[in-house]
Amino acid sequence: MKAYRASLLWFAPSRNGETARAQWEDDGLLVVGPNALGVQVVQAIGAHRDVVRLHPEVPVEHWSGRIIAPGFVDLHLHYPQTNVIGSPADGLLPWLENYTFPEEKRFEAPEYCAQAATFFIAELLRNGVTTALTFATSHTASVNALFAQAQAQRLRLVTGLCLMDRNAPAGVLNRESAQGLCDATEQSLIDTEALIQRWHGQDRLGYAITPRFVPTSSDAQLRGAGELAARYPDVWIQSHVAENKDEIAWARELFPRSRSYLATYADFGLMRQRAVYAHCIHFDDNDRALMRDTAAAAAICPTSNLFLGSGYFDYAGADRAGFQYGLASDVGGGTSFSPFHTMVAAYYVGREGHTKQGLSLAPQQLWWQHTAGAARAMGLEGVVGNLLPGCEADFVVLNPKATPLLARKTALAANLDELLFSMIVLGDDRLIEKTVISQAL
Ligand code: GUN
Ligand code: ZN
Image 1 (cartoon, rainbow, N blue to C red):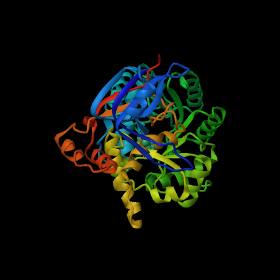
Image 2 (image 1 turned 120 degrees about the vertical axis):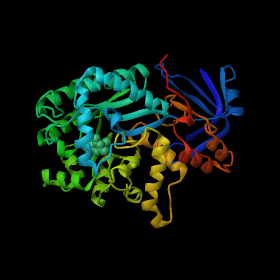
Image 3 (image 1 turned 45 degrees about the horizontal axis):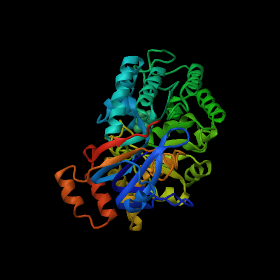
């Protein structure tokens, strides 16, 4: 058992679909210790004066002037796209063709995968991200390298082999060849199943069945992915949907019998709990109802959508329908690993929809969407993204005086919302003094 004394931020459990209810203790105590399986979880949280009485023997680390908060959950990003950040293009499809696919092709070399995986996980931790749902490439070596590195660091990480058996741009993608990015349909499904069996549920790792998006998969590949999703119901599903107008037109052309782009995934059995779809921008109310009724979740990627000019996630529409969502960096369409950058971009995006009703996203809402809310969207409520008793002990230590401007501004905060907003707007990796990951004892 071990205890940490600091200011504490966490969230009350969500009830009846309610969202953020931030809890705060100025002088708090967080006690962590092993559960029955020997995994370090939160044992107690609250005011120092109360919790210390219940755990008088536990050694205390005192983080004076610091804030302890849940580790961030990044609901969608691409580990092979670290080098792609900041690549200019007119929109999604030319960006994929000119920058993303050429970089992903490099992951056919296992050494390239290993160094990229090591850098990626270090960057997540430096930015306070302790759970990630991420794409790999269509090479099994890329999946194995990332899982191995995440296991070594005890990161809670979900990834999977990127399925894409057609329609990759000429010159880069070589159909049915180990040299390109396009895979062979049958083999990609065999590889997926073997990777599920090797990695899913090992330590803190999880597998995600990962069709890249509708335009790069044949009927047979989507059908096979849906069959695997039915056979392995606790495995995740991840993909992209309704991000960009040209992409949508392409998807509609390929599957004209589906009611919409999103409905194509449902038609192949790829919408259910633990299915996370990135972007979800250009939806109608039928799509929103489909998200809700299938219990799929949206990964909102505001820096990516602003960078690639894709559009604005409709928060009001999502709340009206009542489907789940959380925040995501979408590196490398996204421009930053920092959850603070993602949250402030989400604030700008949220205003786009909400200002019509005179509302904007509250700081507690934004923070929740990147921690407990994102965990709930992944089906991991009560496991990560929060510091309620029983949650795995993943947390960040924030230094609100990390920069001169942060120190000046946070000192003026008159309430919790002002403090959180100062950190959201001014924060980056410098605000994260330490990232602590739950250990196995
Ligand atoms: N759609 C299909 N692939 C991708 C990708 O790598 N990034 C984004 N932003 N959208 C996609
Ligand atoms: Zn993406």
